[in-house]
Length: 129
Image 1: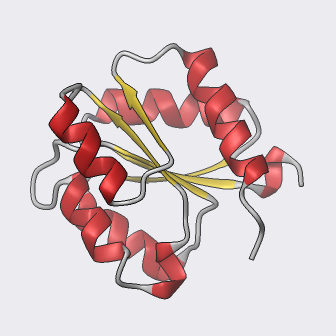
Image 2: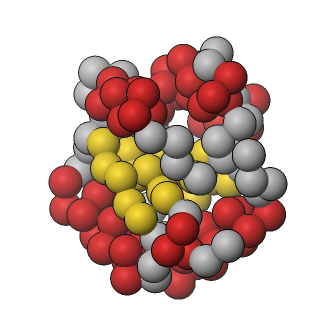
């Protein structure tokens, strides 16, 4: 499958960072969906099934950990690979994310090439449904 056929949901409350990540993904050929917090991301998931979710942890309303706990209860969303993209770098946060099934954990700031490489690898390694 080509990147143009792949969709990434970017869940990030900082508008400038969300737009920057969306721009990078769009330039790389991905379809990009955006949400500013966990609640909005759940609304997006009701209408779309992305191939990957890039998820911040610290967000108002519903944080990234709570979002993960919620979507893991829905079969249609539970198998979507999730990459945490966060400023939290503590072992406790990493352990919690891994326990919730994230496939990767990137700390901000992240190099754009590293982000795109990981997105491509994860999408290519994930079986299509």
